[in-house]
Amino acid sequence: MLPRHPRRQDIRRGIAHLRRGGVIAYPTEGVWGLGCDPRQRRALRRVLVLKRRPQHKGVLLVAGRVAETRRYWSAQGINPALPAQLWPGTTLVLPATPKVPFWIRGRHESIAVRISTHPAIVALSHAFGGAIVSTSANPAGQQPARDLRTLYRYFGRSLWILPARLGRQRRPSRIVDARSGRILRE
Figure (cartoon, rainbow, N blue to C red):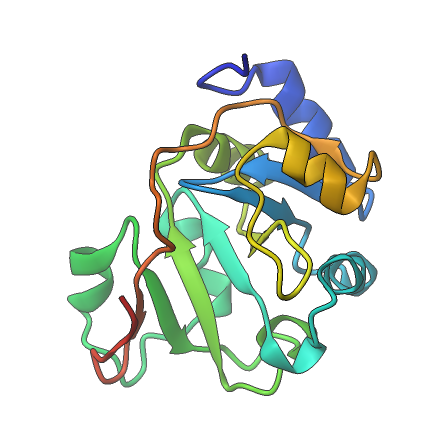
């Protein structure tokens, strides 16, 4: 059985993979996620190839603290109270800063960001010093991996996996447009 909280040496190994441009699988609130350093275009390209996901859709970023995401989004045009009301847990679609490259935001002028309380995500983002890419671990059209057997079936042994338990959430996070307050996915 996987531990509830990731071990420090495993976090260090995961960070080493991220810094070398690798892709890792890690537990999230309800499914296994694929992650990489969002600043490394090649790493993100590998995530998109593994998922068979088109680049124009963009990717979500996740962190354990708001400060770890601030370089990616602007508060211009949003209700300033909204992030505090909805984080952690909800994915917010926020205006992207001009520095956010297209390989992260896709064809959008916005970026999706989630602040998480999952121990693996909190430990990873804190040790990494910033947000990481977060996309469900599944090829397009397949169900997200909720166990290691499915993760291996989808990707073989090609990924480094952070050994820790998934959270108990059964539904994807709610997505809210931070400019309008409109719920995009419940």
